[in-house]
Length: 84
Image 1 (spheres, rainbow, N blue to C red):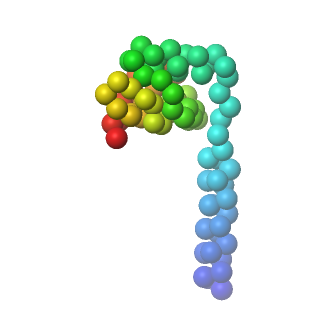
Image 2: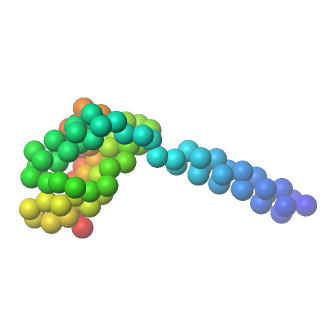
């Protein structure tokens, strides 16, 4: 019985995490801001996602020196660059 309750509780938590993990819609203005930040670094492309904190994550941006992931703040300033 305890195992069933534990599994049920774990399932509920997992479902809540999936619901929270849904993507946040990014406006065209936000995309333009992120694209401009990437262009300022000589980069382009990549997959943009917005976190609930307001931070944009760009995966696989093409840059002159390789492919990078960027974390960009709500003010469009680069927070972190991660090389592959």
